Length: 440
Image: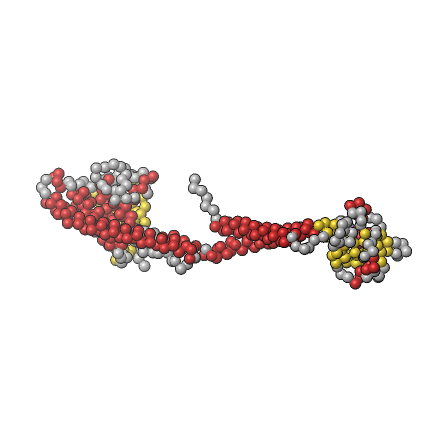
């Protein structure tokens, strides 16, 4: 089983995310190392002490501000034995808890003049480390200065760096996942158009080349290489066509001479070779037809009924001499645009094929812009209907025949924009149907 190709967009998004993660992680580590090695040191107080302090300050029955030992306050006091805080309410009342250091006692009553502050003590046990924050609680709005659990400043830097790094990475990842496919799609728009051009190249459109100006500069060498390969293929095809045309042209004269000698011969055995020689003449002319069609579009206005009767009249003497019959049935006349000679020889090839391998009776039927050649032979197995149209494929091994006849007929139909189909006849035998485009 062919391995599934990876998506360019997936690879770009994945690799960009990895690059972003490494870059953000490196920046976070560098940020931490910088601050750890800087002069910023000391212990900072955790923010949670402010909320605990604000929720523990209540108003008693007399309206005085007091500190109630809430479960949170009790738990915090167990963890920080040197816990203390002071607060100034919005009406100027002052309340404190624990042992407020003498260094801060004078400023407690002036806290309402501050909005926030971070104070880090220099010496253990760092009781002078404190924070000033505005908060609200059961007693209303207040400004608090407090000391509780302390942590090294490097821990704060590490946590902050991780938060910033993760947030930055998530934002970049989201942008990459959304934006990268759009960017890649726009960047590859020219490649997609070039691929569409490549899909339109086939054997009938030689000389086509891919546009280099639509692809990124990095892909230009690939497009040039493909164009060079197409050029070499065209040149090889042209050489092959020239060889086939020259060979077919050279064969015409000896075949014509051979045919004349056989027709003039008195020997019955010699004259029996006439159908085979006629078939060779038809094949050589068909090869020349393909060369002519390659060099110009068909342009004759053709009445299929007239063409069918003319071909049948030309072949009738040979068929009758070999004990065969031929009949032309025009169910509906039709006009097409095409190359008269090539279509005549294609029909001649089908009639000769039917007479030689398909039975005693051959019927040529005209139905609008379609021609049918029907025989009463053994028919063609359904699994062989497409294979017999391939070059050199023969239905059964024979001492005569090249396997080119139906293939050449198919190529003539391809040049005219038509198609060839094979079906079983109602009783026995085969029907080969040629369908052409109607004349405008």
